[in-house]
Image 1 (spheres, rainbow, N blue to C red):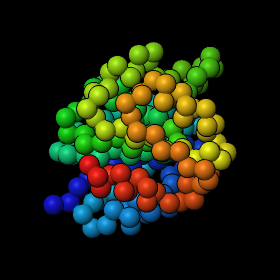
Image 2 (cartoon, rainbow, N blue to C red):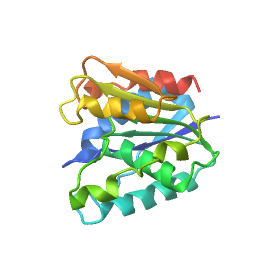
Image 3 (spheres, one colour):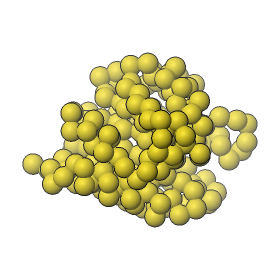
Image 4 (cartoon, helix red, strand yellow):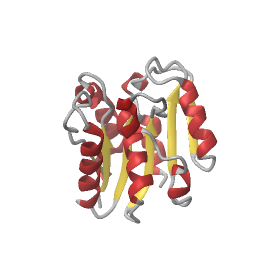
Length: 182
């Protein structure tokens, strides 16, 4: 029986297209026993109030499937974490795999809808497998964001890679290996 993986794209100009090689890498590494679903998130992050619309789309995608593994890159990873911490985690979620998620902070108006609530970690079930991945040479998301997540979610698994940049050299085979262990 095939297992469903929902992958949420990163942001930035052309984020959907930029993350297609990541999705292809993940699908190839997982093989025929998995189907990686990759919906294009709309509107793009330059639209006003895109955050709530992305959260609604994530909720719709989760509701459309019985069992699901969640994965996301960058903005998409942070939005998955925000969705689950604010809306509850359905028992149908088998694991959460977050690749280079930013830890949003600051007082700017645009960042407020992206920020996690103060005690977000307490709202995630500790039995949910949660994995974080970050390359030390990430040129987009500073490595200290990874360290901040470690402080908030000490029970999660954290995999740091020395090189790979923000796009992990378009290789998510490490993520696939962890997914297969579920």
